[in-house]
Image (tube, rainbow, N blue to C red; front, side, top):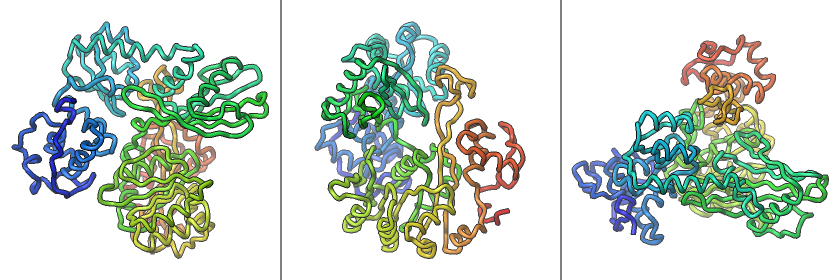
Length: 565
């Protein structure tokens, strides 16, 4: 049995009033005693979250109903269903019962075991923004050690429990030892562990005539992390194929598969693709996509979308079409996924079709494209329209029939999200026209467009000069650079198409992020190339970090209706 703090709660029936997103203030007056300020917490996680306004009663009711079936801890259910964030759960558990926290909340812990033992430091939990620690030594020393290994992270201190110190250090030491294991049976686990702990999105295993290379993709760029001999390659690929349930004897045709592995109290999924390479003695290239659903849990407000209020205004409508556009690898799916998380998924019936479904989101009906079974985008949307939908999300519009069906769905009162490949807002309308949807048809339906790309952000530890935290690259993250416009009526769309409306373009947003110190000119030039030169011809040299943008580009959000100069 779990502790009360972790949520071993009786299935209390609460009024069906709200979904995920409705503020606590909306129901505080009418909610039962459980949510009133004077109600006792009784050490219960659900009651505590409701009382603090962090969880709506209806959402708790749904989670408790699930708990009666799955017998999982309430905290696990709340995070898995995206009802509360990992950080909210950790804060609540620290407040209620810090002894209930275990290494399952620690994903990587880059602090060497000897330092943890020397300074009596326990890392209690990690989130994307913060690290929670306790220490039996001086707090300022612990802070210095933690800051050095968790650059740019908030540090929260909790009560130190000496009895947990040795067990924690031993667990971290066991995990760290995987990085150095290179016996054939352990090498794959070592590579997977290294990829997880260094936030690699993909592992590339590339055969050559006399050797093979292992490359990790981090922040959108590949780097070689290991070189080995052909005999080792054959054993490694055989092990990968075995885990992914692929045919180990088949080397002439592409194969796809998947597997998972336990890591810090959760499971990480890996998607495997094998492709025969002619120039490598009939060996195969293998790519493994790392799918850590807990790490990839995007928050819309943290993606770097500058005109976020425009985007929210666009999709916060009962019907219409909103479009996300950009090249492959520009983060379109992440933006859609983060937007989906802001929808009231209890109140709205949400359907999506993706190719493939990489991250599953609770209370969204996700369909994966399967051409062999006749499940493509157009057939999926045709089925959705018979399933009482409120919101339909199309991972990509590739053909005229799918585009026309998306328009038909919007015309019949649904909100439709789609993605395209176009490089600016006006190009989106031209692309839709190529797909058989006239600008006239879009005028009454399009609620907004966002075109985006991704650029790397400077390492907060070294400021871009290069250090061990950023693998000497100077960069330690990525941010969206975008142009976004929301439309209120047909006339606004018409003026945008005709070039009569000004809004900040992607290059303007990128330059603005160099001035604010988020990225640098070298990274912007790497991505945008000659567009930087054209920008400087129009506006002058790129301002230095901390400088001022040209007056027209520093205009407030409401100035987007000016005529293009």
